[in-house]
Image (cartoon, rainbow, N blue to C red; front, top):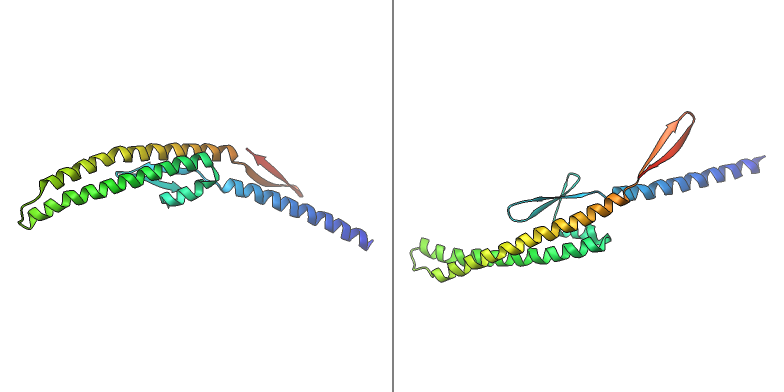
Length: 165
């Protein structure tokens, strides 16, 4: 009789382990959360649940979905170009203004060149926002289709696993 009890315990333990692995697998799929983006003055602010993310963190999260990752890489390139052009433009505008404040004769050609660079960064910034929103749309659509919600319900003396898609 002892042999039979050990066998029953083994089968029950095996079923419980398989059930735990099954629930854990669906729980990991359910952890993938939607990323939201909010347009700001200079770019985009990313949020996942209550956490604010940077562009590089979003890029790491999107590695699992190649089309979204490729689109966000393009957006990051546009962001870097816009940032470089904007920074150089502001510096070129600030030099003649600083010279004027300290009483020297300013070189207004530098300010004009800086203004041109600053204005040329605007299309890159808009393109960055567009590619970012496109990447987030692709990512969030893929996440929504993969979202499975397992639920363990107790009833009477038993329990059941309810899986909602």
